[in-house]
Picture: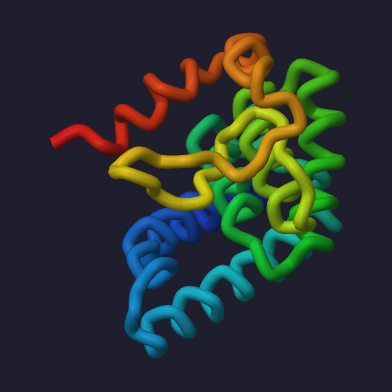
Length: 168
């Protein structure tokens, strides 16, 4: 790994760490926290755009597993930057086709991008809200096939997935 790529890997990991520490702002009722979250994700999305300009998709081969996952997380959270999400999605598709990225992360990014575009998701990874104490996914293209499609990319069935969030 060259010095530039090593520095990029460190930068991506640090961005993800800041993202994790600040994520409560995404759903906060405090407008100041919400605004801070939006500013953070916008800065990260802008920087991911620059990284994609220079390197393409930052695969695990390029930056290591943890930094590649960090890049995916940053793309996931670029909700107000559809251009960044769409570009990341296209580059991730190429990386998955080449065996350089995982289909699971691609599925999550696809669903997130579709929901942000106001369209139906494919894999049911994006939660619209909670009804009767149970998480409900945003509408899906083929809800009856959702768990089959999830299994194809290594995502647990919807009920098992949401059970992770509702455990005491």
